[in-house]
Image (tube, rainbow, N blue to C red; front, side, top):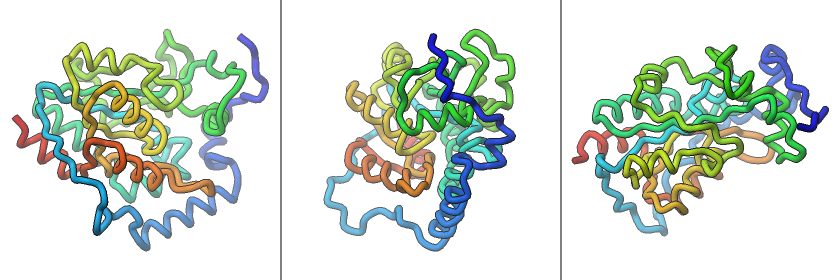
Length: 272
């Protein structure tokens, strides 16, 4: 494996001290995004939608809750991305909403799957990367010591949020092999769902315009009926754009349904 000297992971302490991009400009942008979100909600449903409403009806025998990247690096103030995702996570109540979905799904004995994101030392030898890949490797996001060890995993940025562990580690939840970029093409999620005879997916997790949207697209292409839970995800706000707003537009265009957490839990509770 080639050694790419451009990849020198920062320590978690340094990443947390300097912020995700290690620049004052990004920190200022994140602060400005917090003020903008607090002042107004640009994510409200359109008053006069042009697209037809959803007619998706759940059949829990063939429905799974799928949660992408429910991990510390995305969802905790201790995570390396909090400087740019924190405002969005807090605005949408994402952490609590994901837990509410876990709880509702477990109460109805639904299939639940988690699609995590891990990077091993060999992944740092990639010869070419996109912009976010470069950044994730630089700040040590989702890093693990190796595919065959859990040394240092517990409470690291790659670990699951502590409040989710009671649901994920119950011996029933499917924890897929890691996806490496954004979508689930590189892991075994579809195989695991097919083996459970699942063809409906309730999709949530992080982050909206990256892994969550990419999972939605691939699941749709694979013939699944997909409902996205719009307030059980969030995204970065950068000078390049508001990732959540970009994803929300595409959710509305492509998903079979776009529901709030409250709507989703009601539908799970009332479904046959």
